[in-house]
Length: 160
Image (cartoon, rainbow, N blue to C red; front, side, top):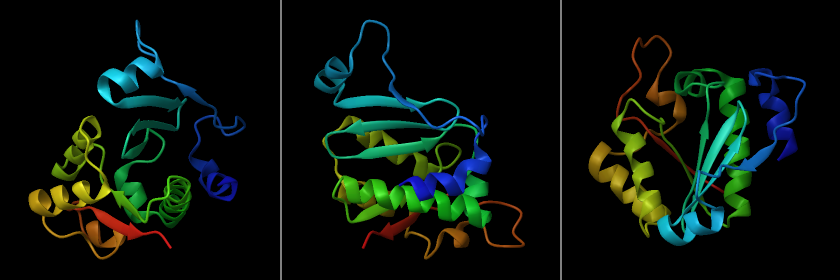
């Protein structure tokens, strides 16, 4: 996983600081209570990522350092995040990674499934039903020369 993070280091806000994950504990809550009561645990890495972990899904989001359009257009951001996500998927024994915008488009609403008993195949079905078929590649969502990102665009990558 470290080689993936090294590739992404140019996007760090504090380039000389390593990423440090911490529990995002809401007032009056604990990770255990959040998992028991809401089915989700919250993790944050200052200035770079935040994550939500449910019983069947893992959702990783970039804070402000890498935007959706950058992931779609910039090879370093694309390859670095895809490397990171593939490694996380392997750690969670998943054979798929789904890439969606965090907001601004219908595909981002799939994150609501975190608060249910849904798994990765449920997320794929939801996306296909509500947004249409996935793009063949991440670059198809915001092709070179286009002025606007496909608002229903998402990408599914198999994990070998």
